[in-house]
Length: 141
Image (spheres, rainbow, N blue to C red):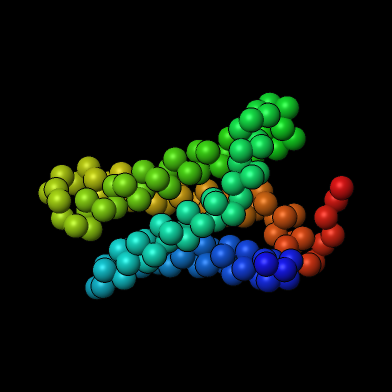
């Protein structure tokens, strides 16, 4: 894949994640809760592709740990991933009505809101990469 196509794909992927997380938040209440659920289902593979696309960075950070220049970002991303995974895992029992236990819903609501906050923070922390990706800034060696 040539570099321009790869760049466009990454921009579309990252924009889709942002739109998806915001849409999840906006549709969490209302008459058609199924829209919220289906957006969540669609986001699972999109998040997986995003992680796969950045896997080389993830493994480099984990392998080098504190000697990696962005170890702090790697730890933040790990927390973000864990919170998002809990949100997804607690969303399915609520959606599929597997349990009438309201604790699933409460945990899903809290981790969902926290996931949105962490997603926005993740974007902010990666703003330089995003600017390079869209061609607004040149990469620093």
